[in-house]
Length: 409
Image (cartoon, rainbow, N blue to C red; front, side, top):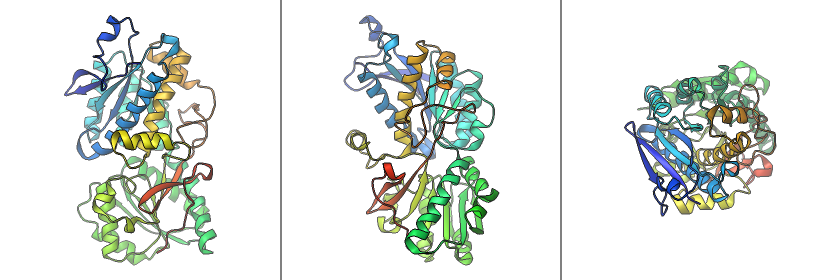
């Protein structure tokens, strides 16, 4: 089975065949059905290129596996074709990329992306007007609070993630130390998803779990100096630190400064900036040992073969949420296309809105169906922890690769 992808470079579409696969334009000549185009709009250049590249890896693997399994059976086995669109690293660039995407690819039936929630908010303003259904891992609550019909959030929203994670964290602390933390400090950047999480915490959730907020530090990425942030955390002497950067360099800078100032406090992160492989390029694994993070998705028990394939084909040491989510998105689009049995974006959007329940094989918790807002029903999260130099899944327990251990200060 052939697999295809198309790359948008500078507004010009370049058809590219996968390795060892004939040029895509020969498909019709050979009597094969035309491929069905799915877009990936993600940062492939600039400050966020690395996560975007990992999203691309997952999508490519998903396309390969869907096509190897027979493609879209109700469309005579039509293969999926991946169209890559570089969103760049600013909201303005992401908006312009979305406009190019819908203009240059009228045959797209769906898309996935866009990494940062602020990018996704901008991109989906464009795709909604084009009736193009978009699956996204981005989890700002605002994404699915605008009444859009064609935005589908596969991750639990930021507010929901905070609600799920905090009781688990508090129970873990009490179970393993005999005491519940009483005070917390927060360091967060001002991106949409981070602010959504913090707002939900301050809107009663911290009080509900018995935590007093003693310091809140907000910064705009990228950071050039974390000295003042860390000094204020040290002065407040919290029992816990909630840590919400979205840029790897910011996470590194803050943790290095914490080490320099000897700020020893159990650190709980939200998001994957603390668990990207690149963290180890500048930090010793011992500094990260025990750090927990609540993330929207991660490679889990039962996906060992897929994780190993990612390592062998792309050199990735572990499977982050960016790869597993875009991988799963290709299978969701396959399901929707089978139900719609049409190369029509409006029909695919309707099929996504009406997907029947069933286990969400590549997302934590819940089902593969979506509610009226476009949120995946019953979506949960994963909690990962740095153990022996690797961030491994420790929650949910049925998907955990290792048992959680309370980080020592």
